[in-house]
Length: 581
Image 1 (tube, helix red, strand yellow):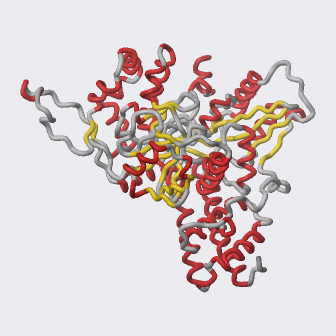
Image 2 (cartoon, one colour):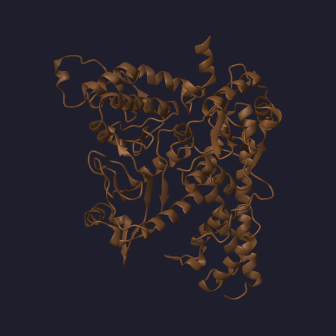
Image 3 (cartoon, helix red, strand yellow):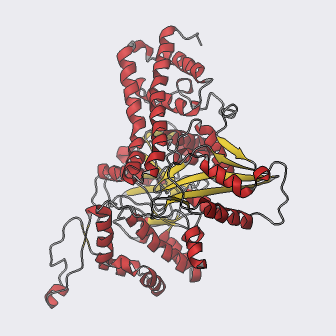
């Protein structure tokens, strides 16, 4: 390839300027989160968490406009764009976010080249710059050595080094709680090895009403990951709320069913590697998403998927469970995800436009999912090998989604598709379990509805087929075409029939608006067996009352946030103190 000329180099520089503007705004948001947390400005924190999701596309559009305005049209051709890419690579050699900058380049490229397909020489299909040693000079985490100053003193210093200005209610008390928990988790007797240290990420992570210290204890060959949530008490002071050590608790905290964290991150790859060492079952793409880098997450996921396709031979088939009325859902059995495509015409009794479905999915992306809604990856124009589609699936797609399907040579192109983690549909799960496990999962279903409601989300369609059970055994909602905000709904008591004639009418004899909901009507289709009914009535009977929903609605409308703790109440230090005294 020819040496890039000045124009190509200038295009590359302008393109990187667009990315750096975007990343500077991301860092400013992470820096602002600290002050907002201390001020308990939860509304602004939620707004920033939501708004920043759209910033990437805005910066891409600005870059496209600048390039097409400032540079000649012939630079956006096959002959010259490869040279632009070469110039761009040269700019990334000492860059601190090269993997994100490459994704930004791809996003702009798909806009300015105006092509229906792209070759590797125009795009970053594989990373061009290694991120392995980016924190060699400025590490992304701090190290503390308890053997020198003692564990309690070290932990107190560690907390103070984050520079929170609001005072702690009783830091010494909280540190003692952390020490007790660490000692219970580490084997005894504990020989202190020469490398005994605590490593913590250099900045706090913020989400909801919590700030998180994220770290790991290293002792010899033992590594113990830990997370310490910091919260406000009722008197305007800070307190360490718990220490999370259980791998399942950490996995739930960093689950893609939750809102993304805010943090001030200089070198994202080093943060992801640090977290991946703590959570090896989490793929790096998911950790990028949890840190707010959604586009990089999508790019990495797609690379993983293509790699899996090359190293597998099974066929994509329709997903197990009751077929959706709005979506065609299919899966590759060897790959733990499902693919969802909106039907051209929903099946009765559903009556919803594809645009409305997309709006609902965008809503879910921007809200606090409270650990109870599956995150989705949204793609356009995905080309997959025709040979990997089962005949039954291909026929279903041809019949139900012809507007979103194109068959080109050996490829099947999906013009729009959502991808989510595969779960066991709750209706199937309830048929397979009994006893204690049935009781646990039904109780968790009730908790799922209550926690979604606390996050101002009403699922709408409460049939069990619209919920799934994750690998960690948690119930999660994943069908969004009827989701809405609790504050927009009208929760009503079901009127009593005036006479026998009202009882036998085929339709409601009273006026019902489009946002009216009658919680009493849920009992028949949720209490499917005596065992299920017993659990719901004993533990979540308030879900069937309009009073519960209207009380929650009043709280949300008043602006008072309802906290959903993303870890068990049983591990909170405050709960332990109440139990002791």
